[in-house]
Length: 411
Image 1 (cartoon, rainbow, N blue to C red):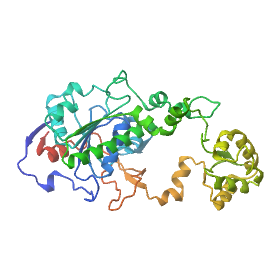
Image 2: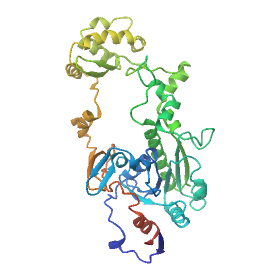
Image 3: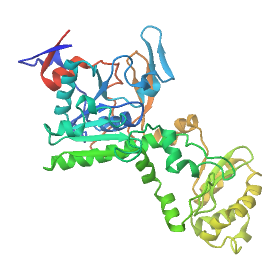
Image 4: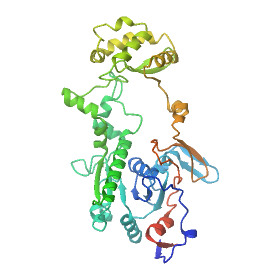
């Protein structure tokens, strides 16, 4: 790949016109994303959804490994495209860089020096040999915000240890409180470590960009999956420090509230959340178990939580006498929070979900389309849109180099 300086830019031949609304919160922010699989790409997508220009840096020979993850949306003429990859890489542009090619590496460094933000989730040390660490770039770019995402942080005995979502769920203690009380530890079905760290990373990046815009210096952000999972485990860690004992698995139950869990109706399970005395009274009335109101085992919230196994046994005998829908209708009438236990097909088809207006049809590079869950937060003067479809590998090499660096690519 050879480039030369372009003296003039012709808007007709060098750029596709962006559809971004200028009121997007991060419009004008340039981001270089060294993202692999989930955590880094999710962080980049959150920034892109809010208007940042996110350039995804990929290696030759396949790029981001998630491009090879099924399921694939197939097109007989233009091939297949990963649905998983599309879910984390909308609103970005992709360029391919051969890190072992000196000329291309120089281009990459120039792009980083043009960026407001660099996000990377390589194993610590991988970018060091290419001169792409924060210490390298910040010498020439004092306002750079640089976020490193890793399993166990950039320092300490596990700094260079590889990590995946499941290993962090295990190490952090999260798996120890997931599953039935008399069963083995269970991994959360959603890769919560990957997405928790992505949320913390994006939040920290935006805060750091704001600091720079207010006249401050750039920032290095060390965002670990382990720290992020422990951060969202505040109730469990405080329980441990408060009692001196680690929390236990309780299935769908709650350690400090009851009845606050899933119960089995005659046909399928449903959930109720009677988290205070008023709601508990309504549960007793709905089930015709009014004698429980003054039962000394259940008279306070603390006692109901302490004796919830006995309470569960009593309630289950009643709940199996009617269908879940009947019970939910009764609890809705009485103001007790309740819900069916949906699978994802049911949750996505629900009119409640559709009322959020977050399901969007997204075109793919192979001519097919897929439904995607968009940015799920509503804000005034901002409307989520898919203004860039998920990219083909290296699709934007010429465009990005010309736009960001003012150079024309010569093939």
